[in-house]
Image 1 (tube, rainbow, N blue to C red):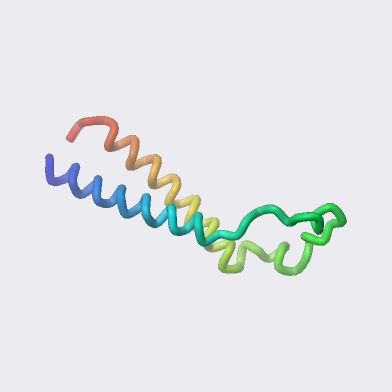
Image 2 (cartoon, one colour):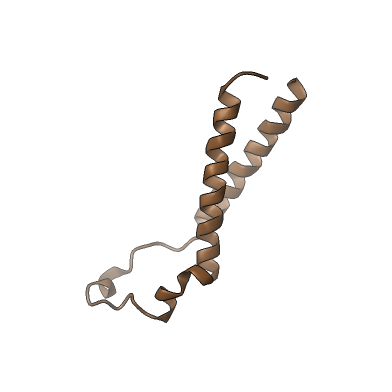
Length: 79
């Protein structure tokens, strides 16, 4: 069981590093003063889910859930 705990811990560390890198790669959410007049509703604003930024957001959500699940598993102390 010690080997399994070590493998899960290594996966947990890799998920932590990947999550940190993904968060740092994302752009800020603040649109500045342009959001007051509705300037944020451009073509890129509407199709953000299909862009690289949308992919980064999806991967961040997946890794965040994986982070919480692995953290809960490691906290159970069954290994």
